[in-house]
Length: 59
Image 1 (cartoon, rainbow, N blue to C red):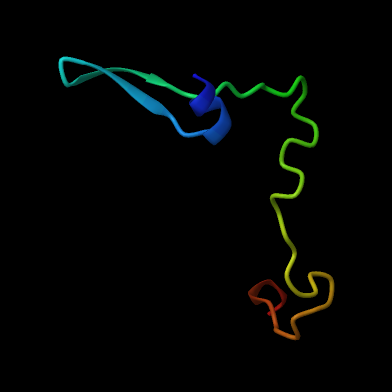
Image 2 (image 1 turned 45 degrees about the horizontal axis):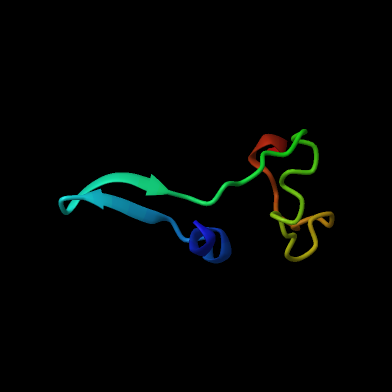
């Protein structure tokens, strides 16, 4: 269990060479979802300026 906790890698438990169970590290769930995706989105380039292209809706 200590090895799984340290490495974060799951461990398959077998009985007579047959997989029976899997030991995975425990991950605490956040008490709120606010900020759960923080840092997972990156902005590349300027998202505010126009593209200088005509839209089909304007024609």
